[in-house]
Image (cartoon, rainbow, N blue to C red; front, side):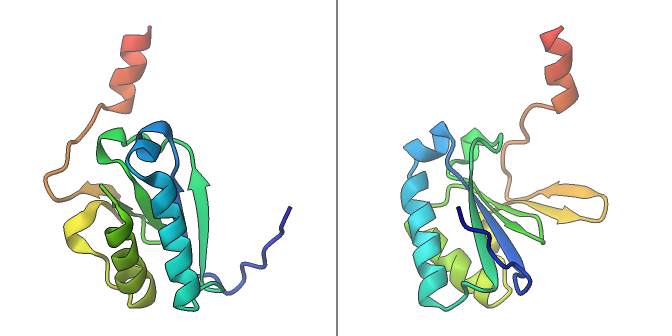
Amino acid sequence: MATWDLTEMNHHVFICNGSSCMRKGGEEVTQTVREEIKKRELDVRVHTTRTRCNGRCKDACVVIVYPEGTWYHEVDEQLAEKIVASHLQEGQPVEEAVTYTYYEKGMILQNDRVTGVAKDKEKQTAK
C-alpha cells in the first residue's frame, strides 16, 4: 500500500463511489479526474480519494474539492474535465455545477439544489 508524500498538495478531491453515484458514472468520473490531473501534471498538487456515499444521492455523481469545501453535483466525464481545468488548475470553481460552498459559518446551498433532510430530524424519526 502506498504512503504518499502530500507536502506539496493544495487540493484534495473526494469522488463519490457510493451506489447511486456509481449508477451515474462514478467510476468513469473517477478515472477522468485522475487522467486529467495526470495530463495537466497536477499529480503533486492534487490528491484524489474515492469515497463511499457522501449523503447527497440526488446530486449523483458527487465530487468535493477541498480545502475550499466545494461540492459539485451531477458530475459526468465532461464536467470532471472542466473541474480539473478550471477549479484545480486555474483556481476558478465551475459555479453552475456547485451544490455547496463552505463559508466561515458553514455550508451555503447554491444553484437551487434540493436542501435535503436535516440530520437532527433523521435522528428524531429513528427513535
